[in-house]
Length: 337
Image (cartoon, rainbow, N blue to C red; front, side, top):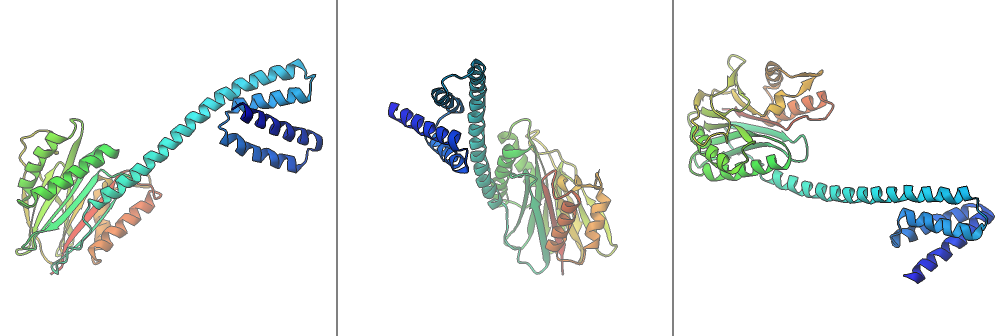
């Protein structure tokens, strides 16, 4: 260690002597290279200042007292700077580690969502779901049974960040288990509510709208657990109905009953489920109204379902300066024939 310090002292002395004699660019270049040597030896800022003072005192033996005293002050400044810098570096390293972990968690979360095609000639399904941050509190679900009936759902965890995302993951696995037993909306929400009530924190809740579309008789039944009302577009009258049913949010009480409502679906009609991240978008500084969302859908009613949801998302994203304030999920199920 002593040899290392002596070597650094000699190197700095030669470098400083050269600079004081020549004051040229080559000497400054050597200084930059020396800084790399300091980093390799893990020298702190205050040690560097102390080294400079020791060498300078040897080269200029009669330094004014004020100059020597000024270095004492500079040393104290560098001590504080060094501590703050090391803390900053530690926090930055930790932030990079967290960002890396969040990126992995985000990719895993996306893998939990369905991405396969429905593959039915009678219906057309489109969905877009975009998190406001890296992790999403929204969840969407769709699946078909052995009779080609379709279950669809959109849920929103009341909370943010990783806890909300973990709750969303729990919902996904619970849905996979429960829908193997039944696709009936009322039954699904009642069973799911008991799962949520037992497994999430008391200050977290989940809203959900769940629907079952019978493709054999073209009938849609739905239930809601305090979720943002959806829409039902009627092609014949070119009008919308609210999809809304009474029901408490998931996780509040273990014993909750949910209302189930049934609709007959005609050719050209389509069902719209969404999260409140859609209706909380802002246009010209004001929250978008539900009738504005309806108008946006009506303007695109002749497009494919996926084209409708994508186009609406891009328009609302652009209106907000490409900065979402909440997780955005929009799902459309359209009867084709």
